[in-house]
Image (cartoon, rainbow, N blue to C red):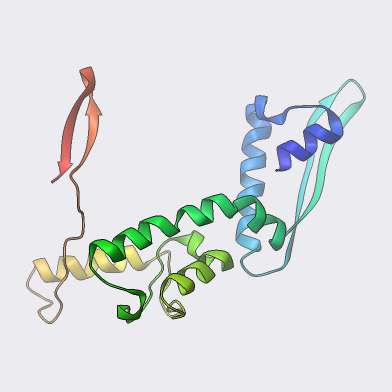
Length: 176
């Protein structure tokens, strides 16, 4: 969005400038994070590039509504895996006891709304830090494996093997 707006106004494609692209990416990430708590974020990138007329700057405002419009396709792509997971587990939204969101992007209000909708109206648990929950789960699993935690059962939910492509196009399985 930022690069497109800039190209419309200035006729310069910032996506071809690696340094400008890096600054754009950082500014976009900062705006995304800000928009989880406010309705509008300011993006200020002085001296993003220059042409024969002199230096060029970006001064834009991005509303949460515009951000959600831009990200709508990505947000909606989250729906299918959740619905498939429920179907595979032979569960419905009413069977869900609690929703725990994982990862920083789950702070985005539109993601939280989608999760609530998919869980039959149950709001996500806000007491869990989405940035730390994976590490906490790994620590619990380590405790279970070490025999220090006995009252928790963790289920392996990796449905497929995970691997990497190695030399010659051969797949090497890392997790089966």
